[in-house]
Image 1 (cartoon, one colour):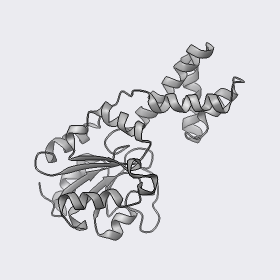
Image 2 (tube, rainbow, N blue to C red):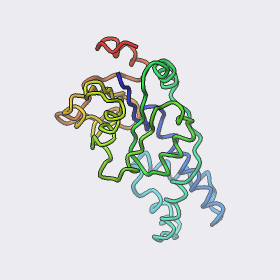
Image 3 (cartoon, rainbow, N blue to C red):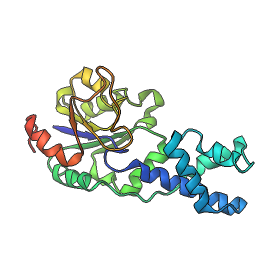
Image 4 (cartoon, rainbow, N blue to C red):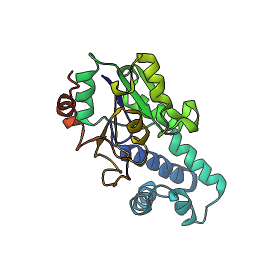
Length: 225
């Protein structure tokens, strides 16, 4: 059994990273322009909850008459490079402690290389996994749903696809190609994708409310620790 985990919204609450980045940008607004950081953060959080992350910085700067491409780029850079304060889900800590000593553990995560590295640093995860694979380090074409990183794990472990178990949260990309290969897939209903209805073939083979249920699921499908 080779256990592979996603990162965002699987092992920790990604919203905590997002809010930390917005707070860093709000502080930049206070330092650079004298705008109250708490009010800026409230503005950006409201936009986040209403429309997602796409145009938060554009809207924030435009509302104050300061929207330029250069300033938006500055905001994106600050957001990406801030040093986050993150914590694992308690159940994630329990699962890593339970399976780490006995089984090879891997992490496969999409996203900006610096952003994802900062998250792994903040969560102190480098020593928890045999390999941490940030897919964009292999080129964007190898981000999920590509199975490139999973094939590399197969080569490292000299194992078959059915030996891989991938635990993730996003049915738009995490599982579809792994299902086709015959790997085992597990969806946790945590984070922003928990209410997403998956298209045909896109959902995981197994679904659990959160990582607390993972040990019982693995025992039930014959993957005993």
